[in-house]
Image (cartoon, rainbow, N blue to C red; front, top):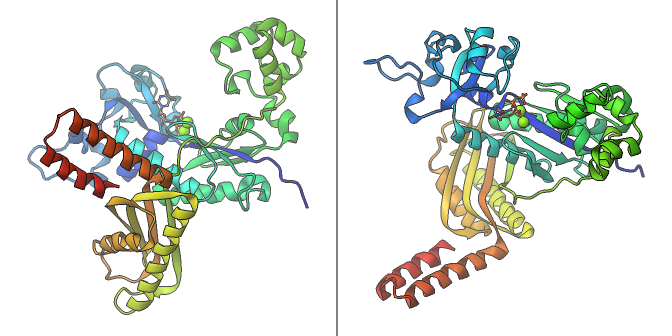
Length: 423
Ligand code: TTP
Ligand code: MG
Ligand code: MG
């Protein structure tokens, strides 16, 4: 038996906030676009809407109608920029005025935090369906432990990294870059090697060639201050740092930081990938051997649908979760996808309840075209053990309010019923 290599991935979305705007306005693909200058308000949805004209769908707004950086008034900094804009030297945290001088024709759009949060959730749940050990590192990046995931060892992690990229693109239309390495420290650096839409595989043996030539600042944890101090000591690159005696570093940076600098320069990092959050969703789906029609293949479809719901219920029960929302996913024979969600009044892990909610979703989609794929998803998950706890705390709250005389007895009866339905 071959021993498993530790394979840790760092995944970071490409030009995240800007790429989200390109989904809304695909006509801007390939153009220099910067994000900055405030938040999107609901009425900003269409830039420079012509007064008196009917509203146009975002994707039909002519490129010429978008606001340009050269016309931008006010201060503020660039939040991020598309790779086309980066060619002009524009980058995150740059002042709008300076960016306007570098690329006056760049299009400027505000941030839509609601969309950002939505896509952040979407890309992370696409990953956990493939590799469940995920550590959330903020809005657009995560660490993933691929070591024990089936296929995680193939080509040093490249095969799974590619699969994850495809799953994210399928779920969101967005690209990301992945670095796979023996640990988080190296993976974080590796994810930048082939941006955008790239994969970089780093092994321990690659340290001298791939890591040591980099500037010390590339190490996550070496900030501008430490970097300045290292520079004053004549240390610019990670290789130069690795060449120093541990004692020398301890003498200059103190026991703990000095020892840490020595370790990271040698590419050592044992920190585990920590999954803090509970799974966002669980799902089951199946692609049919031949495309099926909702009416002509009703019996077959119905059996598959019920089976998926039962299996999803079993998954939830086995893993100890209950779900509030059940959704369906259909892929038609023209590859178009439809999804619908239905939130129930209770948390459930029961196959027939899931079937009932999923059936309600099914009534809200078009079933004229043939189907290639059918999926059922459970979200709004809570630990099954917490369901009783939630119910208890609800009852206790009601009781407290009651004894404090805050609400009349008849209201308690009504609230009690609502509480009963809630859980
Ligand atoms: P990053 O991952 O640093 O940048 P990015 O995704 O835009 O580009 P890259 O392809 O190089 O990864 O940050 C993710 C998002 O966080 C970014 O789209 C905008 C936001 N952000 C800020 O709001 N302020 C900042 O200073 C930075 C760096 C990013
Ligand atoms: Mg990013
Ligand atoms: Mg990032």
